[in-house]
Image 1 (cartoon, rainbow, N blue to C red):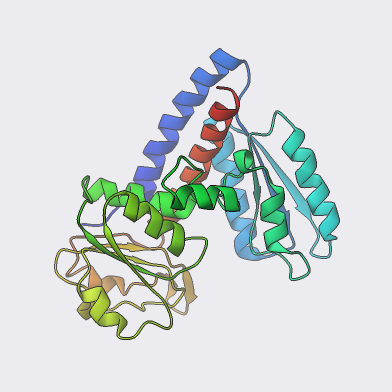
Image 2: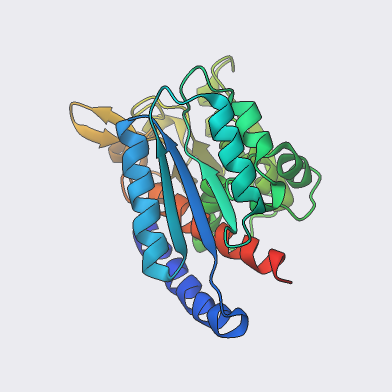
Length: 280
């Protein structure tokens, strides 16, 4: 089975669109999302364009603030502080990666935790790992929704997460623990990664290596979620060797059209959640 991320994301967006219509009639205002984009990174520009397009489509007030690559850090931080105080802004997102002279940690920590739609603020990270209510990073949340489309009850399943980044690997492991999975986090220093993957009921790969996970790494009927996006001479491919793995897996996400659309849909969901919390 191929898990259709585009279709599932579209369903989520339609649900949010209806919710925003109700919000508008109750509160006479709508959720607002402000994205800060620094520099000219081509992938970031595409992401931001899609975020803006889908925000407007479902009725979120979307604003993109663009800065040149050489903007001073203090100017970015003072803009974030200004947005923190603006009641019309429900969510703030600073598009990563940032230029080298801007401290990512400082930027993330300046955003109010309650407006942190990316779920990267240490308070949100701490709440997630403590099992409390928190903002959940968009990509792992999208992966979890895709998993649940295939298997509603993940309790007792053995999940292997390949990659330990703050963006995906670590929060993904926390979400899977919350679902009562047994979780193994693997990374570049893991010995015999293949044998770890062979035991897994669920594999989530986010390593940034094209076609890294091969067919003989995956046990029959495993569910495989591919977070990777890699440009190659064959076009865009994931971290999973799709042709090989799709023959053995019970379900697999394609690249493109799998996790990517869900990440943006979950960002919109987080923005709506921020608005609801601020107005409850």
